[in-house]
Image (cartoon, rainbow, N blue to C red):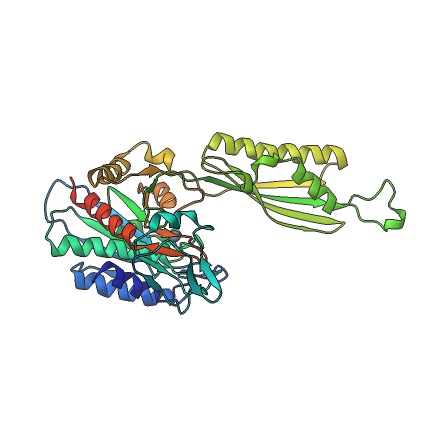
Amino acid sequence: MKLLERFLKYVKINTMSDDNSGLTPSTQNQWDLAHILVDELKTLGLSDAFVNDKCTVFATLPKNDDGFETIGLLAHMDTIPEVSGKNVDPKVIDNYDGGIIDLGHGAFLNPDEFPILKTKVSHQLVTTSGNTVLGADDKAGIAIIMTALEDIITNNIKHGEIKVAFTPDEEIGTGIMSFDTSKFKVDYAYTVDGGDFREFSYENFNASSAKVTIKGFEIHPGGAKNKMINASKVAMEFDSLLPVQMAPEYTDRYDGFNHLTSIKGETGHASMHYILRNHDLTILNRQKNDFINAMNFINAKYGAGTCIVELEDSYRNMREVIEKDMRSVNKALAAYKKLGLEVNIDPIRGGTDGARLTFMGINTPNLATGGYNCHGIHEYADMYEMEKMVEVVKTILTDK
Ligand SMILES: [Zn+2]
């Protein structure tokens, strides 16, 4: 099957995840793609392919030569809960002319709004019909992996043992939690997921969160003089004590941030939720300190117990682990070089399943796919870049 044909087949299958379900997989529809992938893997000759009770697909391509490392490849099957992934009706644009693309449903892909489109003249693009995501995130990754395997098998190219896994619920962060590493014994692995094909990533944010609770003093406003403490106003004051420039809207690349994700308040009580992010753990700890300092200031001003800050750590930057064994990084960079492709090391401004896996003992940097504008109706895929990523993956798998 050709790359495009495969990709179009996958994006038409609804695999939306659901962050309210509490189950893995979070939705039954993810099984549909999982079963199709198991069948396709078996047809390709990965005879042990199966899907486990958590909806993770595993398969092995046994080695046909010695002296290779065992490499794992992963991509996720689900699409985001927030934007529809139902009835995706992909449009194929051959030979893109550099103009405005009318997606339908009143939506347009405009190069003035998305300037990178200007570099894609003459490429074959796949877009949405303006009312759903495309699901290139991450069905582009699945299609790239499947096509690379097929090419290696049909051309009988020498390779080591290759392990493949397709996972559910990446978009809601839960699928990887039940990943069975005993079914994935590899030297290292790659997620193939999202973005400009020149971007290779082995570092991501360290992540923490802060829950801030403010207790006010409620009294009839007519008799409030020198008595009332308005919790909502104290909450605003708390936020003003944090570094102004450390909000996501002012940050890029290696800048960290504190992001106020929600605020609720009345006179008597207010609460706020923040996420804290930084690639550098030392600076993240300083950010956490800013929250403690702000709490202490508020409590000194309004009385002990007015403000409570609860900090919690979540995922960590995989770089600190990967740096101890750079085989995965060197292998990928060598593949780009061999193919004469430009590559940039790009810091991921979020977390990845690969970061989780790295801390579970499998170094897992990320390879891009050539999918753009993920998580919205302007999502599209550049088939030229997807074809190049098939070559990158094949080179990684077949070079000693
Ligand atoms: Zn993704």
